[in-house]
Length: 91
Image (cartoon, rainbow, N blue to C red):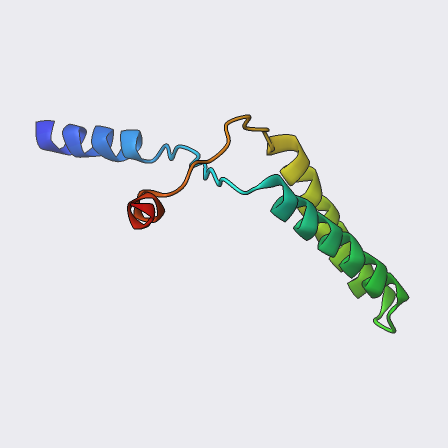
């Protein structure tokens, strides 16, 4: 009986999955470039001959992605230095 309670408690504890966060370091010009590309895709989709429902889906998906990007973006004031491999090549 103790083993069954131990297993049940273990399963209950492990069933609570924590959110996982991914942190990416992307230079600001690269983010701006991709942001503008997403805006251009929205314009092209809006002017295309696709059915209205598909265009609405594409635009809503891009808007959702851009909203999440803007909400979670943080500006890192540190300037990235050269990688260790690049630093060794300079010597």
